[in-house]
Amino acid sequence: MRYEIKGDTLPVVIINLESGESIITQGGGMAWMSPNMHMETTSRGGIGKLLGRALAGDTLFQNIYTAENGNGVIAVASSFPGEIRKFEITPEKPIILQKSAFLCSDRGVELSVFFKKNLGTGLFGGEGFIMQKISGSGTCFAEFDGSVVEYELKEGQQIVVDTGNLAAMSATCSMDIQSVPGVKNALFGGEGLFNTVVSGPGRVWLQTMPISSVAAALRNYFPTTSS
Image 1 (tube, rainbow, N blue to C red):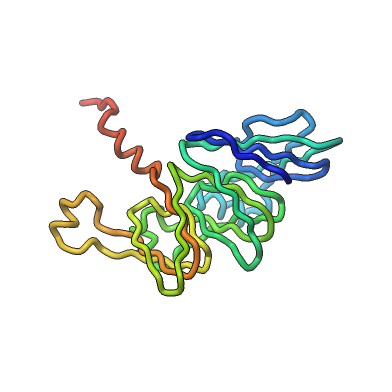
Image 2: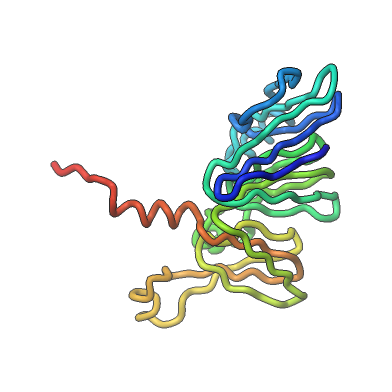
């Protein structure tokens, strides 16, 4: 698989496949492709994995695109202004993504649901109780909101993240929540009641413009109806 990421605020990953090679996308992910790309819609793993992917923010079914009778090209575009990042997945190095971050991968990669073990973390951690786990072996592409900043955390090192800004983390990292100290800070500081705390060892990817923040900022400009 050869690839190229193009575009600035609305990127697309263009993937060149040799004859017989395949990639997997979420439903509706394809932007354009060469005419020799064959599409097959599949649940990949039965009803259990299908429902798990749906809970993790992915589409119920996935599409497998295979280059037939020669090399092929397929482009998968982001759905929101931001960045597309590539991850090399191995059985020893799975990663955890925010909901709906998965874009496409080769066939050796598995997408499954990841439940945060701590219920409080799930309810107040910013992206809900469920995230995506990417495991297996191969190349995976994910889309994040806004620009992305990476940090490498050592054992025991922590970073405090505002709600929704955690885009991805190594599976070796752990996460919890902490309340904003002080009643006045919590009520009037504008930062919400809780922050997410990510602990190393491992790498974290932080996004600068979570779609939830954009929706909240635009809400005041939407017309409202009165009874």
